[in-house]
Image (cartoon, rainbow over all chains, first blue to last red; front, side, top):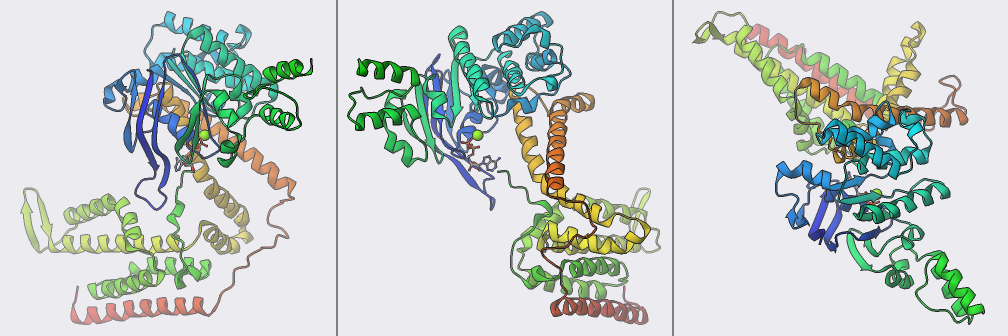
Amino acid sequence: MAIEIKDLCHTYSRGSAFAKKALNQVNLTIDSGSFVGLIGHTGSGKSTLVQHLNVLLRPESGQILIDGEDINADKARLKAIRTKVGLVFQYPEHQLFDMTVYKDVSFGPKNAGLEEDEIKERVEAALTLVGIAPELWEKSPFELSGGQKRRVAIAGVLAMRPEILVLDEPAAGLDPRGRNEILDQIKQMHETLKITVILVSHSMEDIARLVERILVISHGEIVLSGAPAEIFAQIEALEALGLSSTQTAYIMRDLQAKGMSLPDNIFTVEDAVAAILRALK
Amino acid sequence: MLKVTIGQYYPAESFIHRLDPRMKLLCTLLFIVFIFFITNFLGYIAAAIYLALIVRTSTVPPRFLLRGLRAIFFIIIFTAVLNIFFTAGETIVLQLGGFRITQEGLLNAGRMALRLIMLIIGSSILTLTTTPIQLTDAIEYALKPLKKIRVPAHEIAMMMTIALRFIPTLMEEMDKIMKAQMARGADFDTGGLIKKARSLVPLLVPLFISAFRRAEDLALAMESRCYRGDVGRTRMKKMKMAGRDYAALGVLLLLIAAIFALNYVAGVFGIW
Ligand SMILES: Nc1ncnc2c1ncn2[C@@H]1O[C@H](COP(=O)(O)OP(=O)(O)O)[C@@H](O)[C@H]1O
Ligand SMILES: [Mg+2]
Protein backbone atom coordinates (compact mmCIF):
# COMPACT_ATOMS: atom_id res chain seq x y z
CA MET A 1 0.00 0.00 0.00
CA ALA A 2 1.61 3.26 -1.09
CA ILE A 3 -0.56 5.82 0.59
CA GLU A 4 -2.79 5.48 3.59
CA ILE A 5 -4.76 8.44 4.92
CA LYS A 6 -6.51 8.14 8.27
CA ASP A 7 -9.10 10.58 9.61
CA LEU A 8 -7.44 13.56 7.96
CA CYS A 9 -8.93 16.96 8.82
CA HIS A 10 -7.75 20.39 7.77
CA THR A 11 -9.03 23.85 8.61
CA TYR A 12 -7.58 26.98 7.02
CA SER A 13 -6.93 30.03 9.23
CA ARG A 14 -7.73 27.91 12.24
CA GLY A 15 -8.99 29.85 15.23
CA SER A 16 -9.64 33.08 13.36
CA ALA A 17 -12.84 34.65 12.11
CA PHE A 18 -12.01 33.33 8.63
CA ALA A 19 -11.65 29.68 9.67
CA LYS A 20 -12.67 27.35 6.85
CA LYS A 21 -12.95 23.61 7.19
CA ALA A 22 -11.52 22.21 3.97
CA LEU A 23 -11.10 18.52 4.80
CA ASN A 24 -13.25 16.49 7.14
CA GLN A 25 -12.34 12.96 8.25
CA VAL A 26 -10.79 11.79 5.01
CA ASN A 27 -9.95 8.10 4.94
CA LEU A 28 -8.46 6.41 1.91
CA THR A 29 -5.80 4.08 0.66
CA ILE A 30 -4.02 4.14 -2.67
CA ASP A 31 -2.08 1.11 -3.86
CA SER A 32 1.46 1.28 -5.14
CA GLY A 33 1.65 1.59 -8.88
CA SER A 34 -2.02 2.43 -9.35
CA PHE A 35 -3.49 5.26 -11.40
CA VAL A 36 -6.12 7.07 -9.37
CA GLY A 37 -8.38 9.97 -10.27
CA LEU A 38 -9.55 12.51 -7.68
CA ILE A 39 -12.71 14.30 -8.74
CA GLY A 40 -14.71 17.06 -7.14
CA HIS A 41 -16.11 20.45 -8.04
CA THR A 42 -14.20 23.65 -7.41
CA GLY A 43 -13.64 24.27 -3.71
CA SER A 44 -14.33 20.69 -2.69
CA GLY A 45 -10.86 20.30 -1.16
CA LYS A 46 -8.89 18.51 -3.88
CA SER A 47 -5.89 20.80 -3.80
CA THR A 48 -5.91 20.86 -0.02
CA LEU A 49 -5.87 17.08 0.09
CA VAL A 50 -3.00 16.63 -2.35
CA GLN A 51 -0.88 19.31 -0.71
CA HIS A 52 -0.89 17.16 2.40
CA LEU A 53 0.79 14.35 0.50
CA ASN A 54 4.15 16.09 0.45
CA VAL A 55 3.80 18.04 3.66
CA LEU A 56 3.11 21.45 2.14
CA LEU A 57 0.18 21.46 4.52
CA ARG A 58 0.11 19.73 7.86
CA PRO A 59 -2.97 17.92 9.15
CA GLU A 60 -5.10 19.51 11.82
CA SER A 61 -5.75 15.95 12.95
CA GLY A 62 -5.30 12.52 11.43
CA GLN A 63 -2.41 10.74 9.81
CA ILE A 64 -0.84 10.19 6.44
CA LEU A 65 1.28 7.10 5.93
CA ILE A 66 3.37 6.62 2.83
CA ASP A 67 4.86 3.14 2.58
CA GLY A 68 4.05 2.79 6.26
CA GLU A 69 5.89 5.95 7.31
CA ASP A 70 4.04 8.80 9.03
CA ILE A 71 5.17 11.70 6.85
CA ASN A 72 4.55 14.32 9.53
CA ALA A 73 6.51 12.50 12.20
CA ASP A 74 10.04 13.66 11.44
CA LYS A 75 11.04 17.06 10.08
CA ALA A 76 14.45 15.74 9.04
CA ARG A 77 12.73 13.44 6.53
CA LEU A 78 10.94 16.30 4.78
CA LYS A 79 13.32 16.46 1.84
CA ALA A 80 13.16 12.71 1.29
CA ILE A 81 9.37 12.78 1.35
CA ARG A 82 9.14 15.68 -1.08
CA THR A 83 11.44 13.76 -3.42
CA LYS A 84 9.34 10.64 -3.12
CA VAL A 85 6.06 12.46 -3.76
CA GLY A 86 6.17 14.77 -6.76
CA LEU A 87 3.41 17.37 -6.81
CA VAL A 88 2.57 19.26 -9.98
CA PHE A 89 0.49 22.29 -9.06
CA GLN A 90 -2.44 23.71 -10.94
CA TYR A 91 -1.09 26.04 -13.66
CA PRO A 92 2.47 24.85 -13.00
CA GLU A 93 3.80 27.07 -15.78
CA HIS A 94 3.38 30.00 -13.39
CA GLN A 95 6.31 28.75 -11.36
CA LEU A 96 8.89 28.80 -14.18
CA PHE A 97 11.68 31.23 -13.41
CA ASP A 98 15.07 30.29 -14.81
CA MET A 99 16.92 31.55 -17.89
CA THR A 100 16.57 28.36 -19.89
CA VAL A 101 14.24 25.41 -20.03
CA TYR A 102 17.11 23.11 -19.09
CA LYS A 103 18.09 25.12 -16.02
CA ASP A 104 14.53 25.37 -14.83
CA VAL A 105 14.01 21.62 -14.99
CA SER A 106 17.30 21.05 -13.15
CA PHE A 107 16.15 23.18 -10.20
CA GLY A 108 14.64 20.21 -8.37
CA PRO A 109 17.51 17.75 -8.85
CA LYS A 110 19.98 20.49 -7.86
CA ASN A 111 18.09 21.09 -4.64
CA ALA A 112 18.25 17.36 -4.02
CA GLY A 113 22.07 17.72 -4.10
CA LEU A 114 22.72 15.37 -6.99
CA GLU A 115 25.94 15.10 -9.04
CA GLU A 116 26.22 17.05 -12.30
CA ASP A 117 26.06 13.90 -14.48
CA GLU A 118 23.06 12.57 -12.67
CA ILE A 119 21.28 15.90 -13.00
CA LYS A 120 22.00 16.03 -16.73
CA GLU A 121 20.72 12.53 -17.26
CA ARG A 122 17.55 13.16 -15.31
CA VAL A 123 16.76 16.49 -16.90
CA GLU A 124 17.22 15.11 -20.40
CA ALA A 125 15.14 12.07 -19.61
CA ALA A 126 12.35 14.16 -18.10
CA LEU A 127 12.24 16.62 -21.00
CA THR A 128 12.19 13.77 -23.49
CA LEU A 129 9.43 12.05 -21.57
CA VAL A 130 7.15 15.10 -21.79
CA GLY A 131 7.99 15.55 -25.46
CA ILE A 132 10.07 18.74 -25.39
CA ALA A 133 12.53 18.55 -28.28
CA PRO A 134 16.24 19.26 -27.60
CA GLU A 135 16.12 22.43 -29.77
CA LEU A 136 14.02 24.02 -27.06
CA TRP A 137 16.21 23.13 -24.11
CA GLU A 138 18.36 26.24 -24.26
CA LYS A 139 15.45 28.60 -24.93
CA SER A 140 13.87 30.80 -22.30
CA PRO A 141 10.82 29.02 -20.88
CA PHE A 142 8.87 32.23 -21.39
CA GLU A 143 9.17 31.96 -25.17
CA LEU A 144 7.30 28.66 -25.30
CA SER A 145 3.63 28.10 -25.99
CA GLY A 146 1.19 27.49 -23.13
CA GLY A 147 1.12 23.73 -23.57
CA GLN A 148 4.91 23.54 -23.88
CA LYS A 149 5.40 25.63 -20.74
CA ARG A 150 3.17 23.32 -18.82
CA ARG A 151 5.06 20.28 -20.02
CA VAL A 152 8.37 21.87 -19.01
CA ALA A 153 6.92 22.50 -15.56
CA ILE A 154 5.80 18.87 -15.32
CA ALA A 155 9.29 17.79 -16.40
CA GLY A 156 10.63 19.88 -13.51
CA VAL A 157 8.81 17.60 -11.11
CA LEU A 158 9.53 14.40 -13.05
CA ALA A 159 13.25 15.14 -12.90
CA MET A 160 13.04 14.56 -9.17
CA ARG A 161 12.14 10.92 -10.02
CA PRO A 162 9.19 10.72 -7.67
CA GLU A 163 7.68 7.35 -6.83
CA ILE A 164 4.30 8.98 -6.50
CA LEU A 165 3.27 11.65 -8.98
CA VAL A 166 0.38 13.92 -8.10
CA LEU A 167 -0.98 16.25 -10.76
CA ASP A 168 -3.43 18.98 -9.77
CA GLU A 169 -5.65 19.68 -12.77
CA PRO A 170 -2.86 19.26 -15.32
CA ALA A 171 -5.14 19.88 -18.29
CA ALA A 172 -6.92 22.98 -16.99
CA GLY A 173 -6.99 25.89 -19.42
CA LEU A 174 -5.43 24.07 -22.37
CA ASP A 175 -7.02 23.69 -25.80
CA PRO A 176 -8.42 20.22 -26.63
CA ARG A 177 -5.28 19.15 -28.43
CA GLY A 178 -2.97 20.29 -25.64
CA ARG A 179 -5.23 18.52 -23.16
CA ASN A 180 -5.13 15.22 -24.94
CA GLU A 181 -1.38 15.40 -25.44
CA ILE A 182 -0.72 16.04 -21.78
CA LEU A 183 -3.15 13.42 -20.55
CA ASP A 184 -1.82 10.80 -22.94
CA GLN A 185 1.71 11.56 -21.81
CA ILE A 186 0.69 11.15 -18.20
CA LYS A 187 -0.82 7.79 -19.02
CA GLN A 188 2.39 6.85 -20.79
CA MET A 189 4.51 7.93 -17.83
CA HIS A 190 2.42 5.78 -15.57
CA GLU A 191 3.00 2.81 -17.80
CA THR A 192 6.70 3.25 -18.54
CA LEU A 193 7.87 4.50 -15.14
CA LYS A 194 5.53 2.22 -13.18
CA ILE A 195 4.88 4.99 -10.66
CA THR A 196 1.76 5.70 -8.67
CA VAL A 197 -0.16 8.55 -10.31
CA ILE A 198 -2.89 10.62 -8.72
CA LEU A 199 -4.71 12.80 -11.22
CA VAL A 200 -6.85 15.61 -9.87
CA SER A 201 -9.57 16.91 -12.13
CA HIS A 202 -13.08 18.19 -12.27
CA SER A 203 -13.56 16.83 -15.76
CA MET A 204 -15.16 13.43 -16.01
CA GLU A 205 -14.19 12.96 -19.64
CA ASP A 206 -10.49 13.37 -18.88
CA ILE A 207 -10.51 10.95 -16.03
CA ALA A 208 -12.82 8.36 -17.52
CA ARG A 209 -10.46 7.11 -20.16
CA LEU A 210 -7.31 7.14 -18.05
CA VAL A 211 -7.60 6.00 -14.49
CA GLU A 212 -8.11 2.67 -12.78
CA ARG A 213 -9.91 4.01 -9.76
CA ILE A 214 -11.84 7.13 -8.94
CA LEU A 215 -12.24 8.99 -5.66
CA VAL A 216 -15.01 11.56 -5.51
CA ILE A 217 -14.59 14.37 -3.00
CA SER A 218 -17.31 16.77 -1.93
CA HIS A 219 -17.21 19.40 0.82
CA GLY A 220 -13.96 17.97 2.10
CA GLU A 221 -15.17 14.40 2.35
CA ILE A 222 -14.57 11.37 0.15
CA VAL A 223 -18.10 10.41 -0.80
CA LEU A 224 -17.65 7.80 -3.53
CA SER A 225 -14.79 5.57 -4.53
CA GLY A 226 -14.51 2.73 -6.98
CA ALA A 227 -13.68 1.69 -10.52
CA PRO A 228 -14.72 4.17 -13.24
CA ALA A 229 -17.54 1.90 -14.36
CA GLU A 230 -19.06 1.87 -10.89
CA ILE A 231 -18.73 5.60 -10.42
CA PHE A 232 -20.02 6.73 -13.79
CA ALA A 233 -23.02 4.43 -13.53
CA GLN A 234 -24.22 6.47 -10.54
CA ILE A 235 -25.46 9.37 -12.59
CA GLU A 236 -27.96 10.53 -9.95
CA ALA A 237 -25.46 10.40 -7.11
CA LEU A 238 -22.94 12.39 -9.13
CA GLU A 239 -25.52 14.98 -10.09
CA ALA A 240 -26.57 15.37 -6.48
CA LEU A 241 -22.95 16.32 -5.79
CA GLY A 242 -22.96 18.98 -8.48
CA LEU A 243 -20.95 16.76 -10.82
CA SER A 244 -22.04 14.87 -13.87
CA SER A 245 -21.24 11.59 -15.47
CA THR A 246 -19.50 11.60 -18.86
CA GLN A 247 -21.40 12.87 -21.89
CA THR A 248 -21.12 9.42 -23.34
CA ALA A 249 -22.86 7.92 -20.32
CA TYR A 250 -25.75 10.33 -20.87
CA ILE A 251 -26.01 9.45 -24.56
CA MET A 252 -26.02 5.77 -23.74
CA ARG A 253 -28.75 6.27 -21.16
CA ASP A 254 -30.89 8.24 -23.62
CA LEU A 255 -30.38 5.62 -26.33
CA GLN A 256 -31.41 2.91 -23.89
CA ALA A 257 -34.50 4.92 -23.02
CA LYS A 258 -35.30 5.09 -26.73
CA GLY A 259 -35.34 1.30 -26.76
CA MET A 260 -31.93 0.48 -28.13
CA SER A 261 -30.48 -2.57 -26.44
CA LEU A 262 -27.11 -1.49 -25.11
CA PRO A 263 -25.04 -2.76 -22.21
CA ASP A 264 -24.75 -0.64 -19.04
CA ASN A 265 -21.47 0.79 -17.81
CA ILE A 266 -20.25 2.43 -20.97
CA PHE A 267 -18.69 5.81 -20.45
CA THR A 268 -15.92 6.35 -22.97
CA VAL A 269 -16.36 7.31 -26.60
CA GLU A 270 -14.39 4.30 -27.87
CA ASP A 271 -16.51 1.77 -25.96
CA ALA A 272 -19.69 3.54 -26.96
CA VAL A 273 -18.83 3.40 -30.66
CA ALA A 274 -18.15 -0.31 -30.43
CA ALA A 275 -21.34 -1.00 -28.48
CA ILE A 276 -23.55 1.02 -30.78
CA LEU A 277 -22.11 -0.64 -33.87
CA ARG A 278 -22.71 -4.00 -32.27
CA ALA A 279 -26.29 -3.09 -31.44
CA LEU A 280 -26.97 -1.89 -34.96
CA LYS A 281 -25.68 -5.04 -36.64
CA MET B 1 -9.22 32.19 -0.77
CA LEU B 2 -6.50 33.43 1.46
CA LYS B 3 -8.04 36.20 3.52
CA VAL B 4 -5.66 39.01 4.19
CA THR B 5 -7.09 41.96 5.99
CA ILE B 6 -5.31 44.96 4.59
CA GLY B 7 -5.34 47.93 6.87
CA GLN B 8 -7.47 45.37 8.76
CA TYR B 9 -10.84 46.99 8.17
CA TYR B 10 -13.31 45.90 10.82
CA PRO B 11 -16.77 45.86 9.26
CA ALA B 12 -19.44 47.36 11.51
CA GLU B 13 -22.10 50.05 11.45
CA SER B 14 -20.93 52.46 14.11
CA PHE B 15 -21.03 56.25 14.25
CA ILE B 16 -17.30 56.30 13.59
CA HIS B 17 -17.66 53.98 10.58
CA ARG B 18 -20.25 56.29 9.08
CA LEU B 19 -18.15 59.43 9.37
CA ASP B 20 -16.90 60.97 6.17
CA PRO B 21 -13.44 59.49 5.47
CA ARG B 22 -12.04 62.96 4.82
CA MET B 23 -13.13 64.11 8.25
CA LYS B 24 -11.70 60.99 9.85
CA LEU B 25 -8.40 61.57 8.07
CA LEU B 26 -8.32 65.20 9.17
CA CYS B 27 -9.20 64.37 12.77
CA THR B 28 -6.60 61.60 12.94
CA LEU B 29 -3.89 63.92 11.65
CA LEU B 30 -4.91 66.66 14.07
CA PHE B 31 -4.96 64.20 16.95
CA ILE B 32 -1.50 62.90 16.11
CA VAL B 33 -0.09 66.39 15.85
CA PHE B 34 -1.60 67.62 19.07
CA ILE B 35 -0.60 64.71 21.28
CA PHE B 36 2.94 66.01 20.75
CA PHE B 37 1.89 69.29 22.35
CA ILE B 38 0.96 67.62 25.63
CA THR B 39 3.42 68.52 28.39
CA ASN B 40 2.00 66.81 31.46
CA PHE B 41 0.13 63.75 32.60
CA LEU B 42 -3.19 65.56 32.93
CA GLY B 43 -3.10 66.10 29.18
CA TYR B 44 -2.38 62.42 28.60
CA ILE B 45 -5.33 61.49 30.76
CA ALA B 46 -7.57 63.77 28.71
CA ALA B 47 -6.29 62.26 25.45
CA ALA B 48 -6.72 58.74 26.83
CA ILE B 49 -10.32 59.46 27.80
CA TYR B 50 -10.95 60.84 24.32
CA LEU B 51 -9.43 57.73 22.70
CA ALA B 52 -11.37 55.41 24.97
CA LEU B 53 -14.60 57.15 23.99
CA ILE B 54 -13.75 56.80 20.30
CA VAL B 55 -12.93 53.11 20.69
CA ARG B 56 -16.20 52.51 22.53
CA THR B 57 -18.21 54.32 19.87
CA SER B 58 -16.48 52.47 17.04
CA THR B 59 -17.55 49.04 18.43
CA VAL B 60 -14.18 47.64 17.34
CA PRO B 61 -13.15 44.97 19.88
CA PRO B 62 -10.08 46.24 21.77
CA ARG B 63 -8.12 43.11 20.92
CA PHE B 64 -7.91 44.32 17.30
CA LEU B 65 -6.22 47.46 18.57
CA LEU B 66 -3.87 45.51 20.79
CA ARG B 67 -2.85 43.44 17.79
CA GLY B 68 -1.60 46.59 16.10
CA LEU B 69 0.28 47.50 19.27
CA ARG B 70 1.91 44.10 19.46
CA ALA B 71 3.47 44.67 16.05
CA ILE B 72 5.31 47.76 17.23
CA PHE B 73 5.90 46.58 20.78
CA PHE B 74 9.65 46.42 20.23
CA ILE B 75 9.82 49.90 18.79
CA ILE B 76 8.08 51.20 21.90
CA ILE B 77 10.46 49.34 24.19
CA PHE B 78 13.45 50.42 22.13
CA THR B 79 12.61 54.13 22.18
CA ALA B 80 11.79 53.91 25.86
CA VAL B 81 15.17 52.36 26.63
CA LEU B 82 16.99 54.93 24.50
CA ASN B 83 15.19 57.71 26.35
CA ILE B 84 15.94 56.25 29.76
CA PHE B 85 19.66 56.04 29.13
CA PHE B 86 20.34 59.03 26.96
CA THR B 87 18.32 61.81 28.54
CA ALA B 88 20.52 64.24 30.41
CA GLY B 89 19.19 65.11 33.86
CA GLU B 90 20.05 65.92 37.45
CA THR B 91 17.91 63.79 39.71
CA ILE B 92 19.65 60.43 39.61
CA VAL B 93 17.43 57.50 40.43
CA LEU B 94 19.84 54.66 39.82
CA GLN B 95 23.54 54.43 38.96
CA LEU B 96 24.54 51.45 36.81
CA GLY B 97 28.28 51.52 36.13
CA GLY B 98 28.77 54.26 33.56
CA PHE B 99 25.06 54.65 32.98
CA ARG B 100 22.82 56.63 35.19
CA ILE B 101 19.08 56.60 35.13
CA THR B 102 17.58 59.98 35.86
CA GLN B 103 14.10 61.07 36.74
CA GLU B 104 14.01 63.15 33.57
CA GLY B 105 14.97 60.08 31.56
CA LEU B 106 12.18 58.01 33.04
CA LEU B 107 9.64 60.76 32.46
CA ASN B 108 10.76 61.23 28.89
CA ALA B 109 10.60 57.50 28.25
CA GLY B 110 7.10 57.31 29.67
CA ARG B 111 5.95 60.28 27.59
CA MET B 112 7.40 58.89 24.39
CA ALA B 113 5.85 55.47 24.98
CA LEU B 114 2.45 57.01 25.70
CA ARG B 115 2.64 59.15 22.57
CA LEU B 116 3.57 56.18 20.42
CA ILE B 117 0.80 54.04 21.87
CA MET B 118 -1.81 56.77 21.34
CA LEU B 119 -0.50 57.43 17.86
CA ILE B 120 -0.86 53.77 16.93
CA ILE B 121 -4.29 53.39 18.50
CA GLY B 122 -5.48 56.61 16.84
CA SER B 123 -4.35 55.61 13.38
CA SER B 124 -5.55 52.01 13.86
CA ILE B 125 -9.02 53.36 14.58
CA LEU B 126 -8.85 55.18 11.26
CA THR B 127 -7.88 52.09 9.26
CA LEU B 128 -10.17 49.79 11.23
CA THR B 129 -13.25 51.88 10.56
CA THR B 130 -12.51 53.05 7.02
CA THR B 131 -12.34 50.78 3.99
CA PRO B 132 -9.12 51.11 1.99
CA ILE B 133 -11.10 52.47 -0.93
CA GLN B 134 -12.70 55.21 1.19
CA LEU B 135 -9.31 56.04 2.57
CA THR B 136 -7.74 56.53 -0.84
CA ASP B 137 -10.70 58.70 -1.85
CA ALA B 138 -10.03 60.84 1.18
CA ILE B 139 -6.33 61.03 0.36
CA GLU B 140 -7.12 62.02 -3.21
CA TYR B 141 -9.27 64.81 -1.87
CA ALA B 142 -6.58 65.93 0.54
CA LEU B 143 -4.02 66.03 -2.28
CA LYS B 144 -6.30 68.07 -4.54
CA PRO B 145 -4.79 71.46 -3.71
CA LEU B 146 -1.42 70.07 -4.80
CA LYS B 147 -2.77 69.60 -8.31
CA LYS B 148 -1.97 73.28 -8.86
CA ILE B 149 1.69 72.43 -8.59
CA ARG B 150 1.15 69.45 -10.92
CA VAL B 151 1.02 66.73 -8.31
CA PRO B 152 -1.02 63.95 -9.99
CA ALA B 153 -3.42 63.53 -7.08
CA HIS B 154 -5.94 61.40 -8.92
CA GLU B 155 -3.29 59.12 -10.35
CA ILE B 156 -1.65 58.65 -6.97
CA ALA B 157 -4.98 57.71 -5.43
CA MET B 158 -5.78 55.36 -8.31
CA MET B 159 -2.43 53.64 -7.90
CA MET B 160 -3.03 53.23 -4.20
CA THR B 161 -6.47 51.77 -4.82
CA ILE B 162 -5.09 49.30 -7.34
CA ALA B 163 -2.19 48.36 -5.09
CA LEU B 164 -4.57 47.72 -2.20
CA ARG B 165 -6.82 45.68 -4.41
CA PHE B 166 -3.96 43.47 -5.57
CA ILE B 167 -2.12 42.87 -2.31
CA PRO B 168 -4.32 39.92 -1.29
CA THR B 169 -4.16 38.50 -4.81
CA LEU B 170 -0.40 38.67 -4.87
CA MET B 171 -0.13 37.20 -1.38
CA GLU B 172 -2.20 34.26 -2.53
CA GLU B 173 -0.06 33.91 -5.61
CA MET B 174 3.11 34.05 -3.55
CA ASP B 175 1.80 31.34 -1.26
CA LYS B 176 1.15 29.14 -4.29
CA ILE B 177 4.49 29.73 -5.97
CA MET B 178 6.31 29.19 -2.72
CA LYS B 179 4.60 25.86 -2.22
CA ALA B 180 5.28 24.83 -5.81
CA GLN B 181 9.00 25.55 -5.45
CA MET B 182 9.10 23.84 -2.08
CA ALA B 183 7.63 20.79 -3.77
CA ARG B 184 10.74 20.88 -5.96
CA GLY B 185 12.95 20.96 -2.91
CA ALA B 186 13.42 24.73 -2.59
CA ASP B 187 14.41 25.83 0.88
CA PHE B 188 13.48 29.36 1.93
CA ASP B 189 14.38 29.09 5.59
CA THR B 190 17.93 27.94 6.12
CA GLY B 191 21.32 29.21 5.03
CA GLY B 192 23.17 32.48 5.29
CA LEU B 193 22.11 35.84 3.96
CA ILE B 194 23.43 35.29 0.43
CA LYS B 195 21.93 31.84 0.15
CA LYS B 196 18.62 33.17 1.43
CA ALA B 197 18.66 36.03 -1.05
CA ARG B 198 19.42 33.61 -3.89
CA SER B 199 16.65 31.30 -2.80
CA LEU B 200 14.20 34.16 -3.39
CA VAL B 201 14.87 34.20 -7.14
CA PRO B 202 12.58 31.24 -7.90
CA LEU B 203 9.90 33.01 -5.89
CA LEU B 204 10.26 36.59 -7.08
CA VAL B 205 10.70 35.99 -10.82
CA PRO B 206 7.36 34.20 -11.22
CA LEU B 207 5.71 36.66 -8.88
CA PHE B 208 6.86 39.68 -10.89
CA ILE B 209 5.93 38.05 -14.16
CA SER B 210 2.45 37.39 -12.88
CA ALA B 211 2.16 40.91 -11.47
CA PHE B 212 3.14 42.39 -14.82
CA ARG B 213 0.70 40.13 -16.62
CA ARG B 214 -2.06 41.23 -14.30
CA ALA B 215 -1.09 44.88 -14.70
CA GLU B 216 -1.25 44.55 -18.46
CA ASP B 217 -4.66 42.88 -18.31
CA LEU B 218 -5.96 45.53 -15.97
CA ALA B 219 -4.65 48.36 -18.13
CA LEU B 220 -6.38 46.85 -21.14
CA ALA B 221 -9.60 46.38 -19.23
CA MET B 222 -9.52 49.98 -18.02
CA GLU B 223 -8.77 51.38 -21.44
CA SER B 224 -11.45 49.31 -23.10
CA ARG B 225 -13.87 50.95 -20.67
CA CYS B 226 -12.59 54.38 -21.72
CA TYR B 227 -10.66 55.24 -18.61
CA ARG B 228 -8.62 58.34 -19.33
CA GLY B 229 -7.75 59.66 -15.94
CA ASP B 230 -9.19 62.39 -13.87
CA VAL B 231 -10.59 64.85 -16.39
CA GLY B 232 -14.37 64.84 -16.59
CA ARG B 233 -14.67 61.87 -14.28
CA THR B 234 -17.62 61.74 -11.91
CA ARG B 235 -18.16 59.51 -8.91
CA MET B 236 -20.76 56.89 -8.23
CA LYS B 237 -20.55 57.50 -4.50
CA LYS B 238 -20.08 61.16 -3.73
CA MET B 239 -18.54 61.92 -0.37
CA LYS B 240 -20.69 64.30 1.63
CA MET B 241 -20.01 65.95 4.97
CA ALA B 242 -22.93 65.69 7.37
CA GLY B 243 -23.79 67.10 10.77
CA ARG B 244 -22.09 64.19 12.51
CA ASP B 245 -18.81 65.02 10.80
CA TYR B 246 -18.79 68.54 12.18
CA ALA B 247 -19.81 67.17 15.57
CA ALA B 248 -16.83 64.80 15.50
CA LEU B 249 -14.52 67.67 14.61
CA GLY B 250 -16.06 69.72 17.42
CA VAL B 251 -15.28 67.03 19.99
CA LEU B 252 -11.69 66.89 18.79
CA LEU B 253 -11.36 70.67 19.02
CA LEU B 254 -12.62 70.42 22.59
CA LEU B 255 -9.84 67.94 23.33
CA ILE B 256 -7.25 70.25 21.78
CA ALA B 257 -8.54 73.15 23.85
CA ALA B 258 -8.39 70.95 26.94
CA ILE B 259 -4.79 70.00 26.17
CA PHE B 260 -3.71 73.63 26.05
CA ALA B 261 -5.73 74.55 29.12
CA LEU B 262 -4.16 71.67 31.07
CA ASN B 263 -0.70 72.64 29.82
CA TYR B 264 -1.30 76.09 31.25
CA VAL B 265 -2.59 74.75 34.56
CA ALA B 266 0.30 72.32 34.83
CA GLY B 267 2.75 75.11 34.08
CA VAL B 268 1.33 77.28 36.87
CA PHE B 269 1.30 74.49 39.48
CA GLY B 270 4.49 72.78 38.33
CA ILE B 271 2.85 69.43 37.55
CA TRP B 272 4.90 67.12 35.30
N1 LIG C 1 -5.07 29.29 1.59
C1 LIG C 1 -6.37 29.20 1.91
N2 LIG C 1 -6.91 29.92 2.92
C2 LIG C 1 -8.20 29.81 3.26
N3 LIG C 1 -9.07 29.00 2.64
C3 LIG C 1 -8.62 28.26 1.63
C4 LIG C 1 -7.25 28.32 1.19
N4 LIG C 1 -7.09 27.45 0.16
C5 LIG C 1 -8.30 26.90 -0.04
N5 LIG C 1 -9.22 27.38 0.82
C6 LIG C 1 -10.64 26.97 0.90
O1 LIG C 1 -10.68 25.59 1.17
C7 LIG C 1 -11.67 24.95 0.36
C8 LIG C 1 -11.03 23.87 -0.48
O2 LIG C 1 -10.17 24.48 -1.42
P1 LIG C 1 -9.30 23.66 -2.46
O3 LIG C 1 -8.65 22.53 -1.78
O4 LIG C 1 -8.42 24.63 -3.16
O5 LIG C 1 -10.42 23.12 -3.46
P2 LIG C 1 -10.30 22.55 -4.94
O6 LIG C 1 -8.86 22.35 -5.25
O7 LIG C 1 -11.10 21.30 -4.91
O8 LIG C 1 -10.93 23.57 -5.84
C9 LIG C 1 -12.31 26.06 -0.47
O9 LIG C 1 -13.52 26.40 0.14
C10 LIG C 1 -11.34 27.19 -0.42
O10 LIG C 1 -12.00 28.42 -0.46
MG1 LIG D 1 -7.69 23.21 -6.77
